[in-house]
Amino acid sequence: MDSSINFSEFDFTNARRVKRVGSFLNSIGLDFPSSIEHFVIAKDNNELIACGGLDGKVLKGIAVAPSHRGEGLILSIMTNLINIAYSKGIKDLFIFSTPNNIELFEGCGFNLIENCDNEIILMENSNNLQIYKEKLFKQRKEGDVIGSIVMNANPFTLGHQYLVEQAAKKSDWLHLFVVKEDLSEFKFKDRFELIKKGISHIPNVTIHEGSDYIISNATFPTYFIKDKGRINELHAKLDLSIYRNHLAPVLGITHRFVGTEPYCVVTNNYNKNMKTMLEEPSGKSNPIEVVEIKRVEKDGQAISASRVRELFKNQDFDNLKKIVPLSTLEFLQGM
Image 1 (cartoon, rainbow, N blue to C red):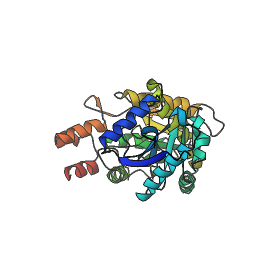
Image 2 (cartoon, rainbow, N blue to C red):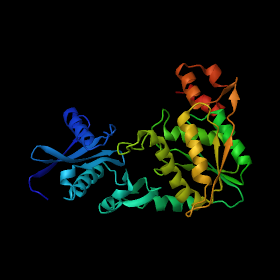
Image 3 (cartoon, rainbow, N blue to C red):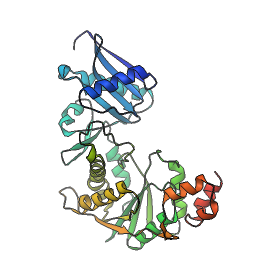
Image 4 (cartoon, rainbow, N blue to C red):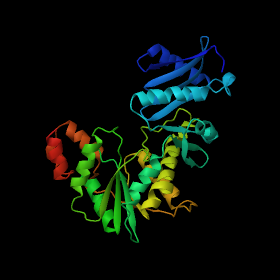
């Protein structure tokens, strides 16, 4: 590597340098991932020629100027970012990218988790996926219909409760994954506890803590996706590919239950992608039947967590008690 190249690091509070990184990424056809917390850059004299960033557990904005590719800069950028992460106690890291970068990131110590339709990949620098799968396998139940639900429940409503009740009735056993990321108004530990209390009367359910392998729209990076109209589709395809090829097989899942979505276009499209992705034949896993259950209504309106949050904001407990279980109501009243 040229001895004139030097590396430096800074965080998101350095507005001038952050703006320069944004301009550099834009100049090579990439968007700027605004959620990056820490940056590493390489400069040749005063010219910015490579950069990368850390957003929680995810490495983002990894890029090298065309004139300096093939010089080993990616490895140096990655090494610096990994050292920053380690200094913060973050050892398990992820990269989302395109398939043409698989070998490049493998050379930096990352392993491929999923290559979705040769369009988008997810890689990690640990074997945590295998560890998580082994943990799930210990909770496997046998039966003809093994159902599953993935739920955020922000917070848990009578609508969520109805979905779990109906899915459990149709299943020999039901596995419920609670999205673990703390990117919602209500923290994971509170959402998990409210779900646990709200379904305590249902005997054939196992509640699982979610994982980094259930990907939310909030953490799915889009800076390298050229066709912005396909962002939600690509997110759904990657998330569902990981679920279909890695999580569902270890539990023997045969069905996935979802509520109908009358309000949110993104969620409605996700459900449509779910039917296509899970029900089609796959060489890695058996087809999974997607079952839509009509959302329960109150006063002619589908019950939704967003409605609960609105009523809670206004401290309207009289209407809240109509659409949430007692355990959720008591939790909200105690906040």
